[in-house]
Image (spheres, rainbow, N blue to C red):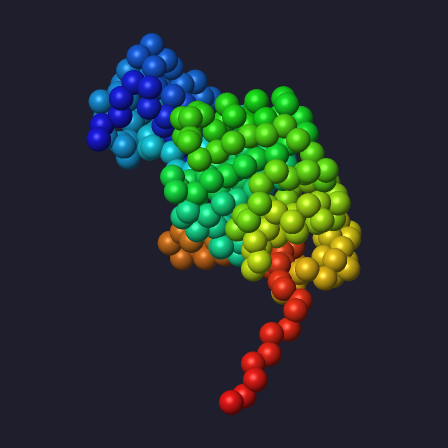
Length: 265
């Protein structure tokens, strides 16, 4: 389908800089390498190569989720795509899953989870700040419209979780260990509890609480580092810059401590 007025697009220049814009008939993208009138883009197929007013080449695409997350407005730090992708698999976020997020922030992780669970699943996002909920709601609406599978709730996950029998709970809060008791009650047996923490001390305290609580097993902590490579003709080397530390991911599964035995006939 050709690009139309009102479509969300991403412009990517030859230096891999990206610009996220919604097309308007009278709109214009300004860059330090010239400008592009939106009217020149409307009607083109995605993936078209166009030129700025300074004759510099720029591609225009429909944005991937990663393009949107890395370019969307932020009011807080976000969970970066390298961690988000791992969370979706490690926490087993499947189509139809029922998931709680403790700490919504700017909405980056919530966007990915909402799309992953699909229309048959549901996501509840808790945050103690109304302004953050409003900010995240705008970011979600800009990409997904008004999703029917998301509810944002003003509340402290340390104090109360209204939902029960959920498949997974994801925590992005300063003191995730304070939420373990409520998370235990909300999770179904076998469900997954995962916390993203900037520091290893937070991961340590969270792990200690999980072990003390005795309702969780399979407790693990992971840190992910990503390094891109430069491959040009005969030049093959790692990029000078890499995505290093962003946070630690600690997860566990809720278990039933009662031991079931089977009598032999």
